[in-house]
Length: 461
Image 1 (cartoon, rainbow, N blue to C red):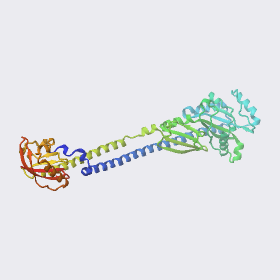
Image 2: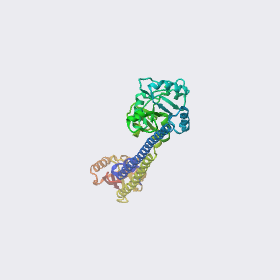
Image 3: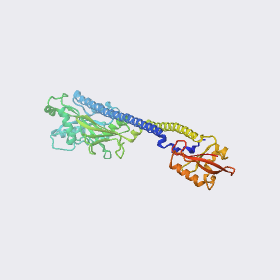
Image 4: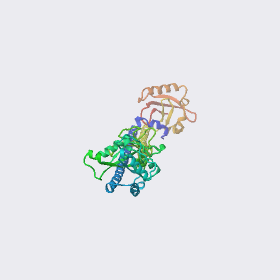
């Protein structure tokens, strides 16, 4: 009979028995890891494509928004070309009809900067005060010869009234954009500024867009003529957060977005930050793009955030890995079961060969220490012992004391000469009824023979 103890799992897992099963396991795990890495790469590629798409869409939306605002200024400049002179009420009515709060979010106001000669200053101030701006002054005062105060700015909120009279040309950032707009007859954008009408506690970054207005409504041909015929500028003032929060929230709500003026990354040039990124500057994807408008280059920097990575995560890679491991183990166990069946068949065949040399024989299989591991069924008929209880037998107690040394010596010689049948040894064996029986037998060491793995003692009465 076969017993689980004859082929324990530890022995079955040894490489010399189960090398094929281990090979199948290693190969299937290698395929699993490969498929897992491929699935991870596919997910990363898809996530990166989504990130790039949102980043490109964001840039396009910002450019379209700026172009729309430029068209608003072009229409405002056209008002002066058609009407010639535009008073404060006309300007207010025009801006109210544009309805910037509804259609053009981000615009703090639309205004007009008028060119005033130093000799015209007193009459200009008196005229504006007569229109109802009682505390109007042109600031800061310089040496002339011309000033460019903000005369109109609508909507007429308390915040916008603070900017009336401000000479924008006195500020180098404004002057650079205004001079280029005048000379090129094109709308130009200032660098990063804090709007004059901004509250101290809300000094967020802003910029202005200037569109030149010339006397007579026509654009002069030469630069010199443009400088001479300049009447003023229509302009729009923008708050960056108000302008971009809606665009970013609609297109890329889970990206960390930053915009820098002049393409230079620094705290001083940062015009906008969504502040959604990791404090540790940890991100999976990053993209930098340039937005060029109104003669100004902005660096648009987008980065992925933990929220973006979480929403873009895909369960398929861990599913592929887990399923592959399970399938690999099942294949390993299947092959191992087949190997065990084959080995057990060999064990049965070897044992059958060992114990069926003669039906009258009593065959014992002893381990290397001489402990019985197996007894042939004939041991019950001849000696009266139960073959299934062979593990509890002590061979020394069954052999006559005078015969034991000879038997022990024969066993030791057999162990030293594996595969060789030892000379016949005679001895007295006590049967189950306590009677001594004269028996003779031989030892054959078969320690490496599958199915035997012991020393065979074959004896007859």
